[in-house]
Length: 340
Image: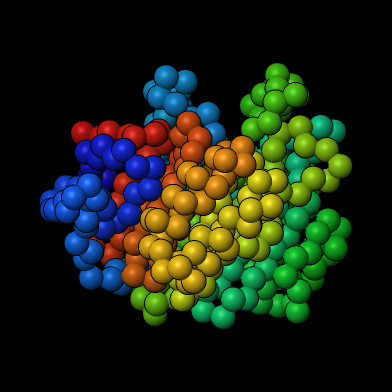
């Protein structure tokens, strides 16, 4: 993959912004104005969680593994869109790959609850009709994102949880596993070390397809050491996931309680719809102003109906990547990351 040299003071990166930083742009007064390129035929953006992700705290082998894993997921979703597939298919396939990779806190790599279990949440939303589906506190569904999509398309409900969600998944003939499938030795050892420390590592994907439809999905194992069947923002439509063809698709990661109370994903869409803000402006206002003032940490990825990409976070880092139809793409882990 061609590496891009990007030094961006803002924590929001759009496809058009990258283009302009590399090739063009002019300023008027104190504001940097960007000449927007024509809308993209398709676009995709992913995240692998936000948190204490720093270059100093990441060894070269770990960095290499995460970049490879993010690239694999991104390329799978990109292929779907390049071949004319739907945004929903791209989102589901991309997230399934990350759910199957123990590097991420979703599916196979889910963190442990206080009692030593793995409890998984996921959601997906179709921007073309505002249909949505989600599952929460599931322990035996191999790919929760596929269960969430089944809830959306094959039931009259939006959110199913626990044993009921598992029963529904079996009826839909989804792949079921025993709970020990999710056991990961490295995660368990880490869990023993940080029983009193939370960890974030949700995965997500947003996509725009050739038909102009947007979709968003998010999947997580929650926070390490959670208790009482705690559910965060991931399966809550409007908090951790939102998509609307009129505005944007958003997937969030971070301290879920804040994302729920501030309805982060929907707030970004609403600011675009009702105040006329761009995706970049709306995500900066919510993540780097509202959330910071509230004490919430984390970030979002998003794509608007023109294919502009946002990857906004207020934490030390966020694993993220994007690809657009005009040939631009990138994988990033750290804040203000610079690549040769």
